[in-house]
Amino acid sequence: MAAILARAGATAAASGSLPKSTGRRRRNAVIVAAATGTGQAMPQEGALERPAWSGETPLSRLVGALIAFKPLYSLMKLASREVIIRTAEKWNIPWREMTKKVLESDVYEVFERIRDPKLVYPDYYLSPFHAYDEGNLSWLAAAEAEPATMSIAKRAIPEATSIEEASQIVRGSWLNTIEEHHQKYSGNCEINDILDIGCSVGVSTRYLAEKFPSAQAVGLDLSPYFLAVAAQKEEKLSRQNPIRWEPSP
Image (cartoon, rainbow, N blue to C red; front, side, top):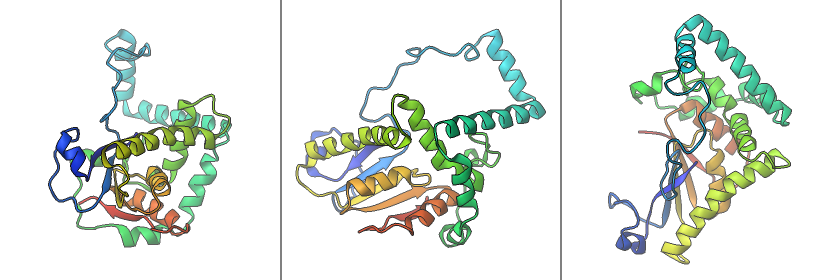
């Protein structure tokens, strides 16, 4: 989930309620970063019931040993993917159809325009992640990111009557938090700039751009595959201020 890291405005800076900035902010802006716990109390370790195979138990050690055996892990990974996809499709998320649409589009041309061949990736980013051998540097990961996001929203809000409703509830919650934060510290000042750090394929970035249509939104991510999918979709939309997609420096 995204959370505000910093926002231009003398009131917030003076109150000391926000992290110190670099001093290079020029206009009212919202800076958003993925997967941070800033601003809200986070669940404490042990607050949730752990599954039987987690932690230091005989079962967890058995699961760890099975995962460490690569041939078996590959089979387990394929089986898990199939379960995840079938579950999503039971919830009326057209996972395979959405993935195919991306992979058969002109996204590869967008990729060539957007990628930075001089970009050096940190070692951790080159490791397998989310069951993708190439991590986030793969077309499959990029093509499946949006249906996976929709599936997560439905799992988080099981009582929602549709995927659209689940997504609106999940996104609306933190969008309202951002707006309340902005009103509290900046009053009626207009947000002019939005930076979404770790934007993936731009799902959250698009929600931010729709919430604050007068702002110039920029999506920043290390993966040119994700950015290409985001940019290719944005090109088909009509927006007052089209979102810019930039590879992380």
